[in-house]
Image 1 (spheres, rainbow, N blue to C red):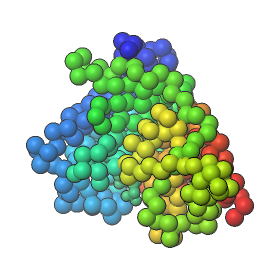
Image 2 (image 1 turned 135 degrees about the vertical axis):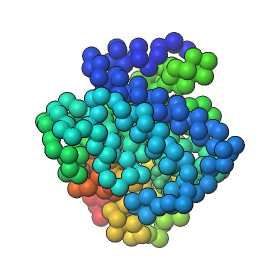
Image 3 (image 1 turned 180 degrees about the vertical axis):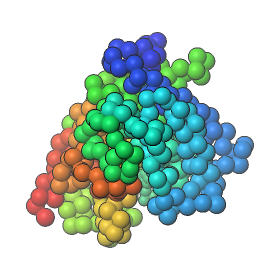
Length: 328
Ligand code: AHM
Ligand code: MG
């Protein structure tokens, strides 16, 4: 194992000291959230809170706690213009007169939180953009394309706490080392194999899927005798961080398509907090991310809680799924 700390790694990858500082703040928030998740059973906070978030989903107590931690630690960063959280209705502006160069951080404080009571991996997802001009605080000012992300990543709270990060120069994985309190580099230059025989989808929604997704999964399930000519394995964690972490480690494709059950909302997963950051990570690792008909990062946002169809992972397999969409 190398002994490269997150700070040493960032100093090698970027000359932007402000970016390094805000990523370090995010990593500190993630360490504190990891601690609260780990001790959640003792504190009795693994259950539902008495609240719903803006999307009408019941919040877990730890969703709320994680959001507060993120606000307390990252929210005081001097170069931060705004925090935009999956769990909070309005944009949380931290400056009255945001300037070009200030950061906007989009985040899902605790993704996959429906897995908390069953003790499966959950995580924190984040995306960083830099304002290109001085702006007046407004909801429109944070509707910025995924192609503008300068950094993205997630923390995963599993058997160990990990941090996976890109500042636009590939993807690197770190593991929290409890003795030193540091994130140490453990998976340098993560690459997603171009081909795969493993897909991840919530198959209980089969009857709701559009024709191209249904045809694609049907053909995978027909195995070596079917049109794909090979047998596929299936995984579904119901925790995007855990599913994407597996794909970054050994390949695969992840699908959460828009279907007839969620079409009214535009899909299930959120563009700014989930699809864009994971899309950037996957692309930086040599994979692809698509709505089925185009690159996720090029979707023009019309609202910060916008939802989108998500298909990402091994490059050649994402291309195959796009062909199913073209044919349909
Ligand atoms: P959340 O942000 O409210 O936790 O929802 C996002 C999660 C993803 O982590 C996961 O891929 C998906 O929802 C699971 O959905 P489903 O329960 O339909 O399988
Ligand atoms: Mg969430």
